[in-house]
Length: 136
Image (cartoon, rainbow, N blue to C red; front, side, top):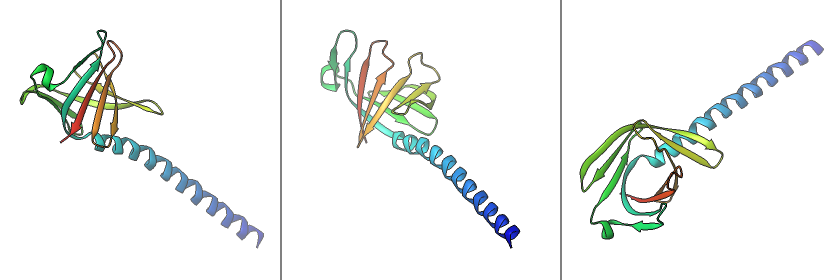
């Protein structure tokens, strides 16, 4: 009887450990997928601010319309409806509160925040610019 009880406890403990391991693995990957899914789509530029000069630009002051489109692995940038650049990217967690976009063809990577339908891209402080977009 004691041997059977010991075997059952051992099996239950193994099942609990397995369930915790599965939960840990799936919860980590779903966070990345969640952020990537929020980023995917077309975004229209509304404003750029900051930089060394501390200026603010928008479509009215520049006379240009900009947009950016993210797929799972590709980002496309448009100027006045014309494709300006296309490159691959990946997301990398910097710390618990910031995710970095690593672009394949750019020296400056960016961190980002998505609040409702607003995307804010931050340069990695070469000039500390902030780029605001609204989701289409």
